[in-house]
Image (cartoon, rainbow, N blue to C red):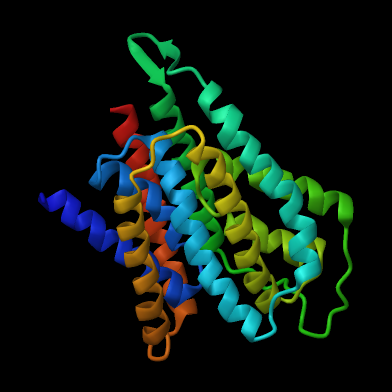
Length: 265
């Protein structure tokens, strides 16, 4: 086992620790870790990421269900268009993308480069949402009001995004639940985990039918991430997650910029 592979497995643990500490965001590192440390090609990495993200989110969702924080009606309304679109994206759209897209001078833009560039842009958007402070959130007493058409459209959009890059999309789902369903922040975060789990795991089913999955590797990697969640949850008793979120946001921003430069060089 070489140094990069060892660092990759440490990265898997780190993903879970971040999820346990700040409640989200860590899964956005899954694809870069798989691609740059574990030498997994980007299409397969986005598939593996869906599984890792789905399993991790499911554990978080079960914990929140026990606490009574999950709004099941909102989760169903949002999840249905999201999982239909993410499944169709992984089953039909991603395999249909040509291996060579176009060239700029002598620089050839391939499918792998395009996926990583798009992923880097998503990382930049996610980092900004983590860095920026948002004070406009409903309080616990706010009556939940459903804007059905917009929730369905947002669910489909997040499904498409998840299908292409393999990220959970919590940075898009949480604001949508707050603004469109008027959920209090705690309920929005808790409900988003259930939505992420459902759409990610159903999206992964589309990949099982198209890709050859290395189940041993994937289960070891996912187990380390899950172990990290419990470590992060324990550490959260001593470290305030909110303070770490902004710092992690800057880290994700730097990673996003790094990926852009690496893919273009």
